[in-house]
Length: 200
Image 1 (cartoon, one colour):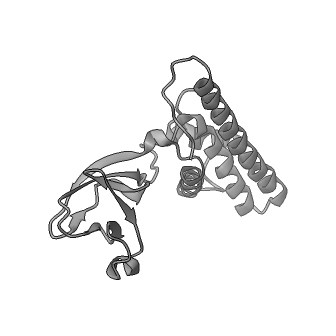
Image 2 (cartoon, one colour; image 1 turned 120 degrees about the vertical axis):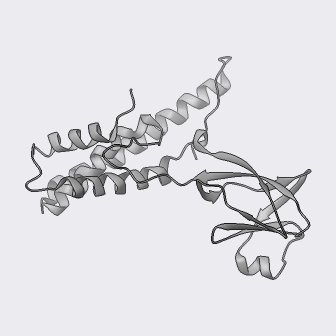
Image 3 (tube, helix red, strand yellow; image 1 turned 180 degrees about the vertical axis):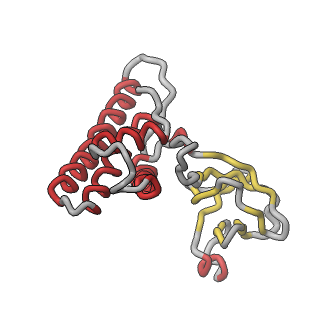
């Protein structure tokens, strides 16, 4: 399946709403619904191919977060040492010998003599606009349409159609996640060369 652009997603939603104009549901509202569905999908079907890596350089135990930083993924490492993420309070209380914490737009490390750390992190995704495209795995783009429709019909006070499309949304995510997972596992067990992308 080819990746859908945001405009294509919005147009598909309008077709299914049986509304060719924006007289009842505005373009801005449809875009808000697209972003809500998109955010939900990012959290539920985020794939490892989107995880980013960086080497941070620390000054007095502090380094700025990378530009697209969302949240840490796993432990940080430096020269064979593992640095676990802890809460700000546990960091202040020095509960571990090697640890990191995220505070505002900075990552702090203990011991403060640590000069560099290799990290992996979930990126933060930009809000969809009419001129942008979803960054999430294209296999899940179609589901955004159902997420839009569930919200739009709820606004239109058609609870039956809202429930129908919400159900379709949930079923599609579950089915696509399962198919993708089975496909990957099958290629792992077989003798097929495959670049492993595990769903989280």
